[in-house]
Image (cartoon, rainbow, N blue to C red):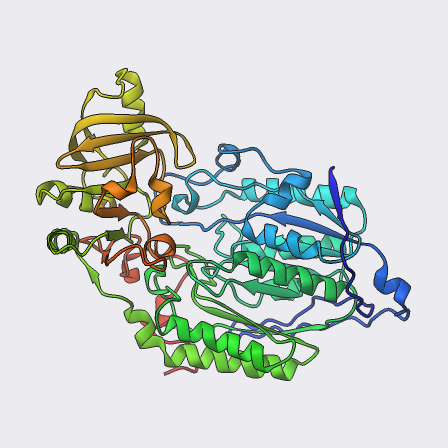
Length: 541
C-alpha cells in the first residue's frame, strides 16, 4: 500500500487521546454526549512532536431511494473509474483535498489511503446501495486498515445521505465498524454534505462531524481542512470532544435549502456566530435529503465543544429552536412555476433583453425529464441551450444507425423513467457533435429550431457553470437561455457570479419524486407526521 509522509511547520500540542463514546436518544432532543478518555501520563515535548499515522477514506453517496433503475451495485461503483488506492485517495474529492492540504501544515504525519470507491455511475439519481456493495467496500477498507497496523487517527470523508439495504444508518455503521477496529482511544472525525440525513448515532462512534455550511458547497474543502486540524488536536490531546445532537423536526426539499437566501442563510449564520463567540465550539447543521427513505431523514444539528457538555447542549438547543421558529419561511422557499409559464416568461425576458436566462428544472432526479424541452419546442423559443437530457438509448441508436456530424436527426428523446419524466419528445434537427464531454465518454449534441441545441448524456448531469457547456461546437455566449437540471448547485456559476439576469425555478406538473410535494412519496421508514410541515415531533407545537 502506498503511503504519504508530509512534513511542514510543527504545531506543538499537548498529548492525549480522546474517546468517541456517546449516549444517543431517539427523541427530538436526540443527544449524544461524547465521553473522553484520560490523556496519557506523558505529555512532554517528545510525545507532542512524535510522528502520527492517520488512515483516510471516502465513501460518499447521496442516495435517491425512490429513483427507478434498480439498486446500486459494486459494478455501478466501479464503472466510471476503479477504486482509488493509496495516494490516489488523497485526491478523492474536495473534502479529502482540504484535509490533505491542512495536514501538510504539520510535522511528520503519515497518511494511509484506504481503498475508496468514488463517482458512482448515475450519481444521486441512483437508488439503494446493496448490502453486498456496502459490505464489500467497507470490508476492503477495514482489511487495509488492519494490515497497515496501528494508527493515531481516522478521517472519514462521507456524505450523510447514503441509503443501504438492511443498514438503516450507513454512515453511523461505517463509524462503528472503524471504531471496532481501532479501539476506543483512537480519534475518528468525519465530514458531511449539507444534505446528510444524520442524527446522533454517528457521534456515538466518532469524535467529531463537520458539515458544509454553504449550498452550493463552496466550503467542502474548508470542512476537510477543519477536520484535519481537529484530528491533530484530538490525537495529541489538545481537544477533548463533547458533543450534542438534535433533530429539530423539519423536513425540506433541497430546492428551498439554498444558503444564499433567508432563512437558510440566517440558520447558517447563527451557527457561524456561535463558533465565533465560543472558543473551540463547532456547530454543524444538515438540512437532510428527503429522497432517501431512511429513519434519520430531515434536519439535524451537531455541536462539538472542548470538554464542555453543558455548552454543547445549550448551543444545540438554541440551534434546534431557531430552525423550528423559522420553519414556515424555510419550507415556503422560492417562487416555483410550471413549465408552460416558465417558457412563456423566458420568451418575454428574451424579447426585453433580460438575458442570459436560466430555467432550472429542479425536480428532475433521473435526468430524462422532458417537460421544459416540450415547451421550448411548442412555444418556439430561440437561442436555447438545453444541458442536458439523459437518454442512453438515443446514444445507442446514433451509433447503431451510423449517424455522423451533419446528418439529419429525428428521434424521440427522454421521458422513459416514469410519469415524473414526462413523455418522450420528438426532436428534429441536425447532429452537430458526437464524442466525449461533460465527463462522459460519449455525448451527443443536436441543433434544432431557431438557434437551439440539446445535449444528450447517458445519465443525469447537473451543470453548475456555463463554461461546463463549452463542449464540441457549443459556445455558451451564443445562447440566451439555458435549461439545466439542478436544484441549487447551478447558482454557483449562473447566479452568484452575476451571469444570469433572469432565473426561473421550474416545477413538474404532478406530485412526483423530486418535487416539493414530499407527501406523494411512498415512504416506508419515515413518518412525515412527526416532521413539519406535515406534523410535529413530540414536544413541539
